[in-house]
Image (cartoon, rainbow, N blue to C red; front, side, top):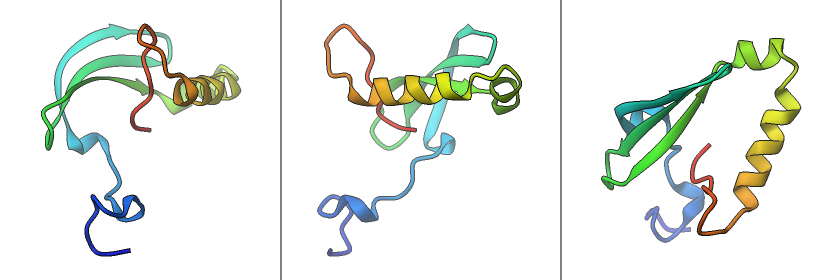
Length: 86
């Protein structure tokens, strides 16, 4: 691969929470919250779900959370939110 990330996806930098600007709180749940965020480099707006790992583990919801992750990665439908970053 060359040194250009747009040519070789394997060398793209890891996306973290610091790559986003928080815009507003959309909602709260038992495991965490959902924020409206803007990706700093592209300006695109996303919903970011932030989970509290300790609550997920205490509630024995790890398998449920991982299943949600797998389903959202596979879905490609205009009326269902797709997973862009983990």
